[in-house]
Image (cartoon, rainbow, N blue to C red; front, side, top):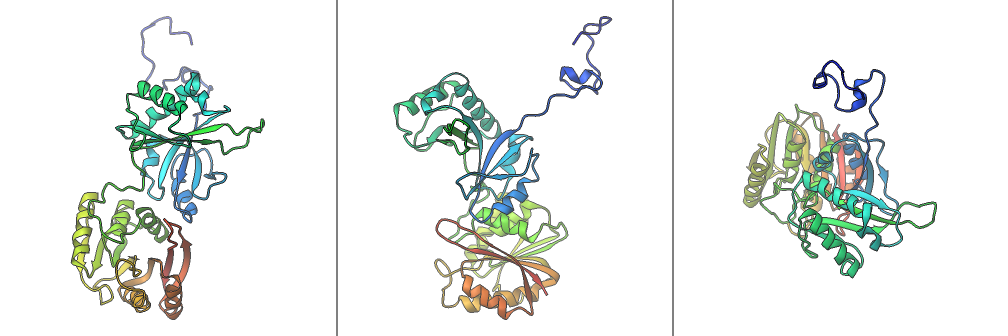
Length: 374
C-alpha cells in the first residue's frame, strides 16, 4: 500500500490493525487459518469432551477420527495453548497430513519444515527436554535420519524410549482421491499427556482417573454458589477437579481413612484450591446442606469388599440424601453396576437418575450416574 506522502515515517493510527489491508476501508483481512488438533479421550466421554472443547475458538464442530473410538478432531482458530486447559481430554496433538507414499519423503523440503514448525508450536505451549517417535519402524534408518534432522533444527535431543515430546507417525486416516491415504504426523502438545495432573503429589491406591473426575464435574454442573460435598473423597481427585473448574461457596471432603485425609489435603494444596477435609464415616450424618455431591465408592479390589458393596451403595444414596439440599445433584462413579442399579431402584423415592455414562479405562468399565434429589 502507498505510504502517506506528507509524512513517510508516520505510524498508523492506533485503532488500525497491523495487516496492510486493515488501512483500507471496506477491505477485510484474510481469514484466520485453523490448525487441525486431535484430542484423545477415554471411550465413553466423547460427548463430554465435545461439549468442553466447544468453549474453544473452533472453525466447526468436533469430528470423530475415522477408525478410532477414542479421538476427536477439531479445527482450532484460537491459540494452541488453549487446548492445554482441557480437563476431559487425555492428550492433544497437532495433526499434519502429507500426501506422500512413504515416511522417507518427510525428511525433505516443506514436509520437514512443517514438522519443525509444529514442534516449535508445541514447545511454545510447554517446554520439553527431548522427543521420540511413536511409529511402526521407529528404529529404522529412515526414522533415525528424520530424528537427526529434527534434533538439529529444534535443538532437542532424540530419546527413542523416554522422549517427552511425542511425534506419532501413522498411515493417513482420511481418504484421498488418489486412493493413497498418505501419512499423518501428530505432534503432542506438551511434554506429558493432559491427563497427567501436576497437582497429584500424593498418590493413593484406587484414586479416580482425573479425566473421569473432570467429566463427572461437568455432568454435575459447575455453579459458583454450590455447596459441594465429596463423600469417600480418597485422595481428593473429585474435589480438586471441581474447584479447578470454577468457584464454589463451600467444599467439603469426607473419608474414614486418615491416610486419605492426608493425601487429599496435600493434593488440594498443590492445586492451589481450598476445601475442608474431615475424617469421618461418610455413611453417617454429615452436617450441612449441599447442592452438589460427588462420590467414587471403593469397589473391593484395593479398598472394601465386593460382598459389602451392596450395603455400601445403599448407604451412600441414603447418606447423600440426608446431606443434600432441595434440588441437589449427586454424581457417582462405580464399577459395581448391578449393585448400583439395585440400589437406585430401591432408592427411587430419594433420587431420580438423570443420566448414565459408561467409560472404558484400562480394561475397566465403570459407569457415571447423575442423579437428582426427588
